[in-house]
Length: 189
Ligand SMILES: [Zn+2]
Image (cartoon, rainbow, N blue to C red; front, side):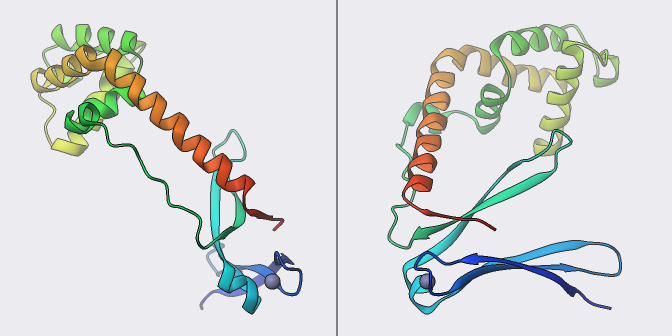
């Protein structure tokens, strides 16, 4: 048995002469899937493309989306190139964007004083240390603490410079998205 159309939600298109809709399907396994939104208006589908933004709707991790008709000529996001950031190791960038300098400093201490992953206590900063080791392993397929410690020390030494650049970039991107939403037509689906 395949997917079955359960419900269609719709709202008027930006010009008001057509509609925009989402089809919701489910199957025998109780799985749900939304298809769309689709623009059912010749004029608006020429002028607009749809962009959806997802966000966490509930604290249990349930996601929801808002949908916008964005003008087709709207400029793409152009990131300012930054040599210092681009030349840094990707894992260094990851650590700086995800952890505070204090956490990385404590984790470095823990790794320096642990012989293997299994010796690291699974609480407090030890939990962060384990998390970082697992992340490193999933990317580079090694959990040698010495190598990971080098990466963490690299992140600590570049922290102050790179965290400012990362934060600024994030703020610039958020401003870009906010402006784009303001200039677009929000669909009430
Ligand atoms: Zn229209």
